[in-house]
Amino acid sequence: MNCLSSVEIEELQKSEEDLWKTETRFDESYMRKLMSPDFIEYGRSGKIYNIEEVLSIEPRGAKITLPLPEFKVRLDFPAFARHQIALKCNSMRGVYERQTVYRRIQERSS
Image (tube, rainbow, N blue to C red; front, side):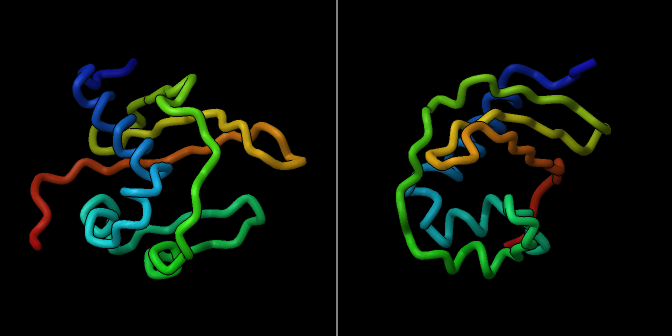
């Protein structure tokens, strides 16, 4: 059962879409506010990237449809929400699934 409000779901979708927009994805200040200091990303190759590695990637555009089609969110625990999207990638691999886990926090100190 999904106990997230429509506003919370919209906020999660905006956060995910911002990861794909060049103007927000490569804005280091914005990304540091969005991501946890212990953020990790698993690449399709299986490589694990930490926040510093992700933030140091050279800017490049992503060929993706926004708003994200088939954006689904589920609440795994009261403090964690996970969403799934199916992405059409411009490669031989075609469509793949991406999952992101968001943790609710009260207020993060600056």
